[in-house]
Image 1: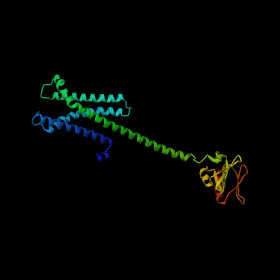
Image 2: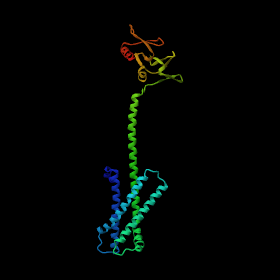
Image 3: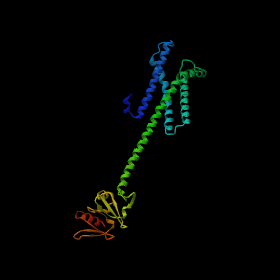
Image 4: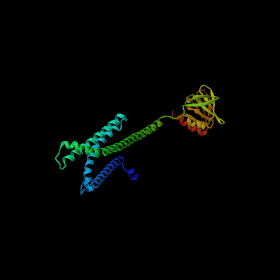
Length: 292
């Protein structure tokens, strides 16, 4: 229903809906009064537009007082809904209806062809307009309350969504900054030994040797553990100080003490272990050592 309203802002949509409610109410009341006047022959020469003018100023008064309701709901929508807050809203609607009835009764009494009388005001005009206007005025304020409540709730949700979007953007930027600073390489190796798991800090690994479909992890305490993995997979996990010096060996260069460049190049570790360096990897090893 009304698909064209989807392209209108929430504020304009709410105003439009309230305007339609008021217009329908004025038109309905005008036709209703015209029917009673003609049906019961209460007057001659009464036209639709003459009645519409009379009804319009009364609904303008109603609409002006509704701004009090708008302000009240705007303040209250962000607070927790309780029985007390609902009772206060009902009390405000009843008060606005009473004020409406009094204003239109007073204006009708002042501008009538008869002499103004307080007695007539309270005995005739106020009871008449209470019976005629109170129900529809009350329903109108209830309708506006529901529309405004939904509108302000939607507005609040949009603000929260925007804040969450901005927070996500900020956190995303922060994550990227931290990712650039933090080394995400593994700090441990988890090796299965029988039914147990051995946790080895990578700082304790001196070098890793390829062994068919497995690797042998040599540690600084002279122990060796067999792990089902490949050198390539481990090379991607380990930090930059672990260099592939040979197709069958990765070395922890922090534990290297010498590089021999004889006929066959070798890396010498602190425990005097010799690990061959292939010609294809020699430049990488030299470049690493030149940094220090």
